[in-house]
Image (cartoon, rainbow, N blue to C red; front, side, top):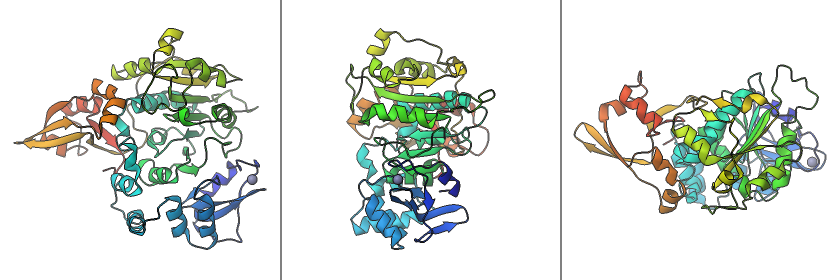
Length: 421
Ligand SMILES: [Zn+2]
């Protein structure tokens, strides 16, 4: 973490500012703190692998003790939640290697248990919508500057969408240390990451951010009322003059609808339940299916629409946008920028088989559960296609050949972070 993060960090319990406890072990490189102990009025918290751990759950107290004892390596191992020595050694090797890939690290961390959700995230339907929402809404409210936060952002796929829009760099917040470590390392290098509990007050000062998003995770939070009030608090501009600045926005993307069953349902609310969580500002609630249709038809993303109660009630997922910035609620052209430069690669959902100088690509899902949960991806991902082997091999070495442009649009070719797989 950059030391400037201390300006915005607050204890989730006492609300106090955090300071580096200089009498205890610390490892830093200039203004970048890799391992240290932070103290407030009530508590001390560790910084592990450059990530402040702002909660007391699970391995956090053990990790803090390791940092205090001058063993940041053991602190990281504790936060990875690994007790198998072989696996821990493999992860230590991956962490210090420049050639390791995101896929290898996900597997070594045991996150493949999530059915491929993270690995295949860049082409899943809810990501497509959340990415365009992030680009449209964040670009609008951050036009005069300001910082973004991705809450419960997992391994940072959507944080990446915010990299070039947020200044200073976006903050990724999630309870699962392994996931945010992956984000800092592979998916969204340059972001700041904070390990914190979405069911507790957010460890940030009021008005720190101008844009907050929580995508694909809100229905798994138990303290939804607190979470919404916290998102409003950390984006509250207060008395700041807003002549040239946007008053900011809070977005909840892909929140499951209590009235329609979906896989990994969580503790979903009905659309009006999400609406009523926002006590001080009326959010607009959108049908995700309608915005998804906008995205796969090539845009624009119609945020000026008013979806009827009947439309919202039958959609498995809804989207909430709360803002006092009228520029958000209009049509936005789609924005194909990935947010941070990566490299064009074949979507890992495709299995390639050589046929002469061509390649036959077949869509192949990691599991039946994945196939069911993300079935809507078949509206843009073809089951079967043949491509020129040389054209695929030449990706990224010059202008994109016309035949490949359509494959990018269909998400067969993806702009992926470097060393993704
Ligand atoms: Zn405190």
